[in-house]
Amino acid sequence: MDKLKALIARRKLFDRIFSVIGLLALTIGLLTLMALILDLATDGLPRLSWDFFTSFPSRFASKAGILSAWVGTTLVMLVTAMTAVPLGIAAGLYLEEYAPKNWMTALIEINIANLAAVPSIVYGLMAIGLFVYTFHLGQSILTAGLTLALLILPMVIIATREAVRAIPSNIREAAYALGATRWQTVRDHVLPYSTGGILTGVIIALSRAIGESAPLIAIGALSFIAFLPTPPISAEPPFLSFQWLMDQFTVMPIQMFNWVSRPQEEFHHNAAAAGLVLLGMTLVMNGIAIWIRYRFRKRIKW
Amino acid sequence: MAASLSAHATRSRLRHLRERLVESLLFLAALSSVAITIGIVGVLVVESAGFFKHVSLLDFLTDTQWTPLFDDAHYGILPLMAGTLVTTSIALVVAIPLGTITAIYLSEYAGYRTREIVKPLMELLSAVPTVVYGYFALLFVTPLLQKLLPGLPGFNMLSAGIVIGVMIIPYVSSVSEDAIRAVPMHLRESSYAMGATRLQTSLRVVIPAALSGIAAAYILGISRAIGETMVVAIAAGMQPNLTWNPMEPAATITAYIVQVSLGDLPHGTIGYQTIFAAGLTLLLMTLVFNIAGFVLRKRFRQVY
Image 1 (cartoon, chains in turn green, cyan):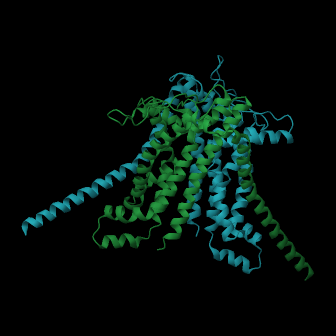
Image 2 (tube, one colour):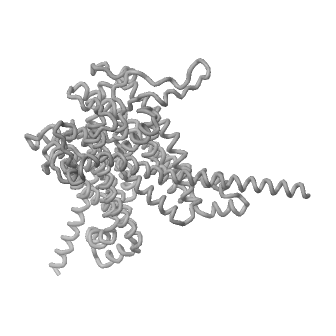
Image 3 (spheres, helix red, strand yellow):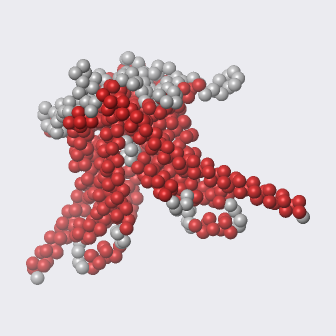
């Protein structure tokens, strides 16, 4: 009997030990995240000033800034969002609402699952071969935006499918019963109810794209850009210009990579400051996404 | 009456036409994903074909030197493969235990509130831009390791691997957790009814039942680690170096592609084509793991 008691006591001890180990494993990840943020903050915070945002890169670390980088990131993201969002939502809607069960659909589904796991730099290699040397789009904002759009397309498609799948079928049946066509049902019922889920997925996908640098380095993005792209709006007619699409560019992560690759410590501080801004952007975007997910989950009760 | 009927017919025909048009457009959008794959494979194969006209496949796979940019050019992928395998292995040594324990803890031990707070925080780990991780590896983790291991060079695969490992914890833990949660509750309950503790239930009942799903999570982590670029490019150095010692600097396949892209090699030269051959190798490596993962996931869905 005593033996049995000892055995049970030992098992219970193991159980408690594991719950401590589990907590530790959890904290290691979170502690790393904190160490990373603190490390960036101690090195980079002193460099963050208004001038840092309004200066071009420079040979002198103390005068260098991220003006061309954040303008570039904004414009590239604009192209990426304009391409990936409509394309991804359309593809997701097709697969969930329209696709017949046949080999074609199966092919597309396997293909998307595979694309999601292709290393990002491979997308860059494809972009050099296709956009730069076949379509002659140059090493431009357009090329960069399209490359990142293709990279995040699987994420947008998967997010759309999950959001649409969560809508109960009686909503669709009610619409059909009233004589609505398939597209009317999708446009007026399925899409509005899945907006929250889709939006969450799109924001998370865009936050990945913002931090992505490998494919853009592959297409030959420069890291020293001391000019801004052509402004999209001008005072004289035709007021709107799309010349900026073809301009050369740099983006935040590439600027940071350039600074961190230099031996001088002053440039490392610049890199830390750029990293802080970049991290801030992605964390804010992820925060918004989590908040939207939470809000919609609370509000919609079927 | 006849007029209104024909108006109705026209409207119905128009409506039908619109339906078909929308469906075709959506189909084209879905098909675009296939076009991307064709684009990727096409570009890599065409450019690599140019490379393999100069270099035999045997040399590519067996030569122990990778010096395409030197006068005495060697085109052996082995040094780059070794770099990729070493950093990936270190990453897995970090990510697999931490990710698995995290998954078990979150699904079997943690309460609802802890899970709701911790899961999004863990997901942030994979949201941090990789270039920021590169900075962290080079300027925080390496100096820290140098205190523990004197003589560690400023560029080394160890610190890059560790940081990639932390980065892929969320991939491993969230897919594992999904697999663990898919294990039916009655299996756990039977185990508890026999007097097993939570640990015994987790290790002997839940994990064996979720094994193929957990393996799929590991494979997802592996293919992320293989394709990771910026961390190794920043922290592991960019010199091809055939070594299995993680304390040395070495280039991975991805780091080599970055190195060439940063230079100004003209398009069409053999030096430039090397990055496509390297890219094709990378794609094939991840493809093998993806297919394995796909097969495993299929199996784990069919279990119950």
